[in-house]
Amino acid sequence: LRATLLYVRLVNRLAAGTMSAIRKKIVKDDGAALSEFEKEVAQALFDLEATNNELKAELKDLYINGAQEIDVSGGRTAVVIHVPFRKLKAFNKIQQRLVRELEKKFSGKDVVLVATRRINPVPSSGFARARPRSRTLTAVHAALLEDLVYPTEIVGKRQRYRLDGSRLLKVYLDPKDRNTTEYKLDTFAGVYKKLTGKEVVFEFPVQESA
Image (cartoon, helix red, strand yellow):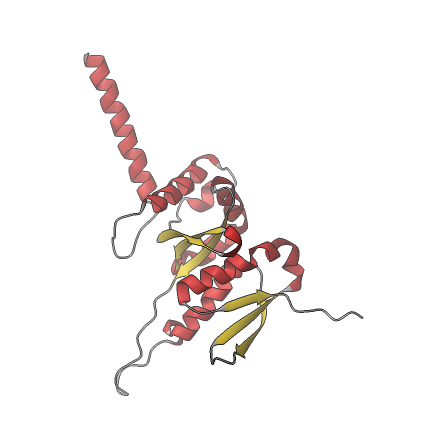
């Protein structure tokens, strides 16, 4: 009986240690409780750090701020992972490999990484300190576009005005990445609409024949 109790305590201690390690892979700025899905994503990151030799060293000091599932057109589901802005470049270095591995774990779902950025409100007085440009709504939404399509580059944008007065932003991507990116265009648009409330269409510019 005593041996059984010691074994149970050891298992519980190991489980608690594992949960603590997993919890370190996600740090929410507001200290809010984690959703079940966020726990799944944190577990996936923990597992990759423990078992994937290509990603182990890079993932050691990386963590995320949150994660959510978003339904996009065509019956697809996107996994949106929010990463700290200060860690974005580090994530970018391994992003293609990391996304590939996470999409294996979340089979049939498109994974995208976006940085956590703050939007400062418009000053109520002309005497108020000016906002950093990077904290304006326009700048944050523009940066989100770049996050969504990384590592593909945005080569052009065009604002279209509909007859009802609504606006549609067209974003043109580097044609050299068509084969690896085209299947995700609806995912990019769906995630952007969910996060900003704005309509956007991602396209590749038409290349004129010689």
